[in-house]
Length: 223
Image (cartoon, rainbow, N blue to C red; front, side):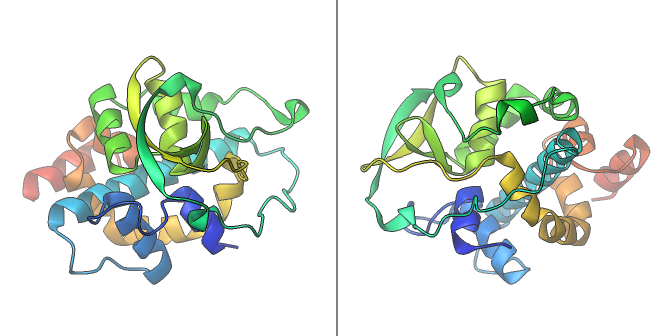
């Protein structure tokens, strides 16, 4: 079930930014099933690229964790969005942490690794700026998947995060976000061609979609 708490963990709470950001636009897409016309094309395209990478990442993690037992009681009721205001902070990406599965459930994330290594570092840096992680200490609280990608691909870089002023515990691990896959798939199918055209390169479009290279080049050349 896509609870408000889980949606905030995937994206971000309202009020974190003075101006609209791609992560917030993605949140509205998940809630409403469409992109509001009030946002610029640039922000819409950035939100669609976030959608595409989150879909591919969760599909890869799902394949890697196919034998993991069904998760129960991981969605907590407490809402951290009202805990305190968040302040900007720079942290080394490798220090970011998220809730882990039990050790006996952990297996090699081969599909996930294969996906992540296809993403250019310059694109990942932009992605993190579109969805800056919200943290409590070094634990990922919001924009969790963006923080996970930063941890894996930008381990030595200092990235900008928003730190909550009061300590809260991390509630979710990667498998909790599998509930978003049906909605992400629906939105992906609806906006697939726009995602291909919005990608900075054909190689990124190939990584973020299920299309063959020939179709990628055909769509991009005709746009």
